Image (cartoon, rainbow, N blue to C red):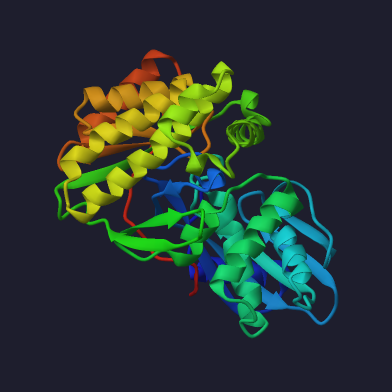
Amino acid sequence: MSSVSKDSVLQQFRDTYGYQATGVWSAPGRINLIGEHTDYNSGLCLPVALEQRTLVAVAPRDDQAVRIHSRQSEATYVGAVGEIGADWAAYPTAVLWSLAREGMTVGGIDLVIDSSVPVGAGLSSSAALTCSVALAVNDLHGSMFTRDQLVQVCIRAENDGVGAPTGGMDQTIALFAKPSTALLLDCRDGSIDHIPFDLHDAGFELLVIDTRVKHSLADGQYGLRRAQCVDAAAILGIPSLREATAEQAESLSDPILRARARHVVTEINRTLLTAELLRTRRFDDIGSLLDSSHTSLRDNFEVSCDELDVAVTAARVAGAAGARMTGGGFGGSAIALIPAGKSADVTESVREAFAAQTWQPPHFFDVAPGGSASRL
């Protein structure tokens, strides 16, 4: 991948369109420390923004044309305001569509997109894209909407425009992250709490293990899990699984719905415990919660895969305090909480485990909690 920077995306804009962009905006990818598949259940999650970001160079047009060039696909989409494109172009064009539905008079626009957030790795590359575009267009229109409103604009863009059933965690962290913190998000009322996440001061590192795989069997599985959770809550007579007790979850007669509800109830509790451990700087005790989260995602929610399981096991064997898959599952990334100085051991252990399976080597990088979407 070419270097991603403000200067490089501005140069690409000039090369593509022959004139200077008005400005550059960016938004971060994220890892979710814990609280997986809880956001659309009105639960709690604990994401952390990454230093890896999506950048968009933008300039308004005096007509209704929309041109979007992606440095990743090396392709240029051409359409009109209000049309939703296909493939990668669906995301930025759906943002324009969603802003218009919210009441903004959206004119034509030229965009160039570049990103250091790995695509398909469970690190929220889609929200980094939609939030950077939404903030850029909003700023160009005099900041008509608040960031809370832009979260909803981006959720609608992905849910209704693209057809991706996102729960809202990704957009919230992209627009509200602060450096050196994790964001405790209550998806029932939208409240947030920034919790100090000083990894290095505590003597730990957080390693992302991008398996670089995405299994086709995942097609539709995210939406299916969401529907199963809705069904379980309806049977229990509650608005969402956030309101369910452990006893209620175990009372469900359908074994699949029972397992899905069990994961949500226990994962919300693990998220609360993890947040409290961060507040009291008890990093040593977080590892077991990450391990339990992965086990539940694998066994109760059934969204893991062989590559994620091998990565997690190999990381633990090499000295990780805890590890788990992160993101929607069926591929993507795992995270490992590692005592300082053990990162090389964990990396080598995972590499060797993948080589033993004749899988392609995974990609690794350390987490440095970053800030929110902004104009550069």
